[in-house]
Structures are given as C-alpha cells and as structure tokens.
Image (cartoon, rainbow, N blue to C red; front, side):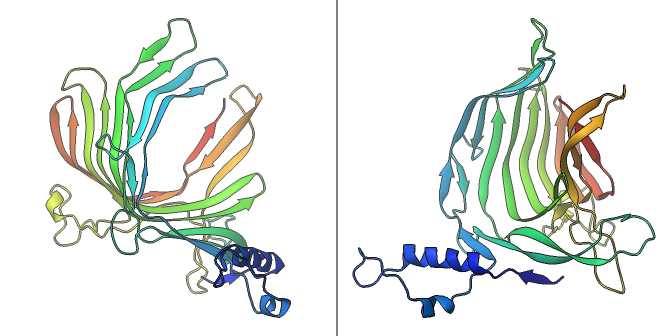
Length: 322
C-alpha cells in the first residue's frame, strides 16, 4: 500500500496559526509572529496526532427515542454509560503509549471495487481517504438500559421489555478508514474487543435473563490448530487480531490482485414491495473475523462456551425505511 500526503498552502496557514498560538518567548504573555523566510521553511503535514489520558465521563440520558412514521417507537429510559460499576466511564488510566490517536488525510492506493467477487481483473487507483489509527487504547466502558420500551403506535400499545447491560467493554486497538462516493461514504473499521457481559433481563425473576459472558471478538483463534479447543476457553489464544467490517484496500500486488469490498453508507430512494419510492438509508456491511463466548446462560440454564470461527460475509445489505 502506498500513501501520498497532501502538502499545500492551507496546511502552511494551519501551521502558522498553531505557531502563533503556542510559540512563547521569554515573556510568556507576548506572542511574536515569524517572518516570511521562516514561514517558507515550514511544511504542513497531512495529519494530526492526539493523546487522550486520564479521562472520566459519566453519561445519563433520561430518554432516548426512535419514532417511526406510524408513531410507533422504541425508547431507552435512564440510559447510562458507566465504567461497569456505576462510576464514570474511564479512558486511558494505564501507563505506556495507550491513548495516542493518529489521524491522516491523503491519497491511498487501492484496488477497484467493481465486480469485486467476479473473475475480472481489478485495477490499482488512488482514492482520497481519511485514516484513524489507535494502536493502543485502554478503557472501562459499559452501557446500561434499565427500561427498554417498544410501542406499535396505538393507545396502550407500550410494552416494557426489560433491561439491557453491555460491558464492561475492553477495546485494546482499532482503526478506521473512510472515503466519499456519489451518495454516501465507503468505510472500513477494524477492532479487537472483549466484553465482560451482554445481558438481557426479560423479567424480574433471578433466572429471567439471557446472558453472554466473556465475549472475545477478533480476527482468528486458530481454529483447528494444535492446542485449540473451542469447548475449553483455557486453550484459546489471546492474540486474536482485528475483526473487520469492510475492506477499503483489496490487494494491489500484481501477483495477487483482489478487488476491494468496502462497507458503505448511502442515503437515497428505494422502491418498497408495492413499487412506491421511499427515502431510505442503505448499509452494506461485508465483514470478516471470529467470535467466541466463554459462557452462555439462558433462564438459569448453563449452556457452556460458544464459538463462531471464520466468519466471512461477502454481502450483507440492510435498508432502513422510516
């Protein structure tokens, strides 16, 4: 993969603005401009590096609603984002390089997307792209919805469906790439994730819950290799790589050409089953990776561990019509 970064007058102006803000001579209360000759020696880069450290955020939303065109709705009451123990969500309280975010904008060599799964030969092209890379990230984040409500829009049609807990969520690393196209955005998201619990409590009884415990999401657990037993979490490797949604790049190696297959977000018009045009959001979500769960409990019955290895969805299309 080749990357060409943009260097232009705008980036120089940005560099000049930052220098004006942060340059401080002996007298810290004064700002000193630099001359044109010094400015000519400054070349703006294509990106920004951010560092996030020792951040705590507590979020409590009284009501989060989605209301459809027929007045039916889904509502989350008292929606909270915490650390999983009723405290504020915490980000990068560890040591080391965790919390550094690299953001770049440039022209990136990719393979074409047309007929990606056919026998046609892809071509190498350059595409303007935003890239975000976070090689090390440390967080304690959980989502809690004490009251999940659904209504079909009729009087008295509200149904209280229980509560939902997701977390705490560990996200050791992730990256994101995006590029515009005609009616929307192409994108790719790669991440490794570990979740303590995903629980849906459907009634107040102690056993009235569906709970997935110690979920691991990544590239591969080396299924079938010596030492790996999907039924025994103690044998699972911890270096599992990234689960990916979308493939922005494909393969531009002349000896192994492969079409790219990005995830896509589009807004447009689609015909419903009766042939009537409807405004819609279209999602294409090709994905690849593996998911394993150390334990599943349903209604007080222990189902043990579970494994879904080698997931590959070349086509996964969703259309959202209000």
